[in-house]
Image 1 (cartoon, one colour):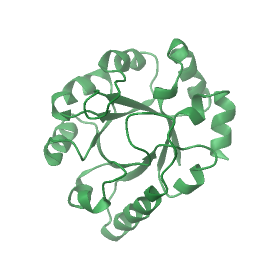
Image 2 (cartoon, rainbow, N blue to C red; image 1 turned 90 degrees about the vertical axis):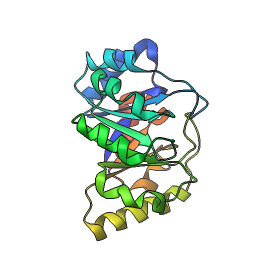
Image 3 (tube, rainbow, N blue to C red; image 1 turned 180 degrees about the vertical axis):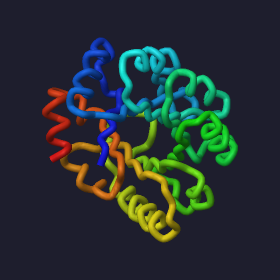
Image 4 (cartoon, rainbow, N blue to C red; image 1 turned 120 degrees about the vertical axis):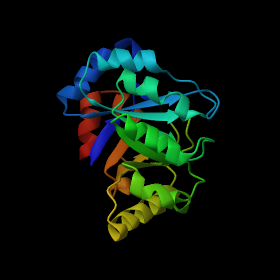
Length: 210
């Protein structure tokens, strides 16, 4: 299982320093949430921040876009240094077109589903994507509690991947901490924000791995 810290919970006055701590503790993937204030009510950060981060680390950039029109921003995100772009099934842009554009840029394409979206709603595109992100909270804000309903979705995705010989990774994001990470034992990647950045980062990472 890969732990992908979400910089949404980082201290931006010490972001470069904190990234070095992550690297020292063998963190290889960084989760970057991009919000537009429209698809979700919050606004986070965009391309300038990603570009700045790209200059100071070689970590894999897992960019989760919570924006209404992803097609408009794929080129800019790729040019900023994204290694994977994960967009939401619930946006108005056509899923297959978004996936095609991301993959044509030479990076990985992921699809995310909100808590009220069923796995069956994305079954037809599972063969085309590199990752499925199961949101275990409502997207847009950090610090929410893990929704147990996401466990059934994870199990369904594991079963479908095995039955149909698909190659997608499974990721979960929301409410992950030392008490809930065991519920996500079947995923490939867990996103953790406050559970990594609040307090001693090195100790937090070790506790999550345990």
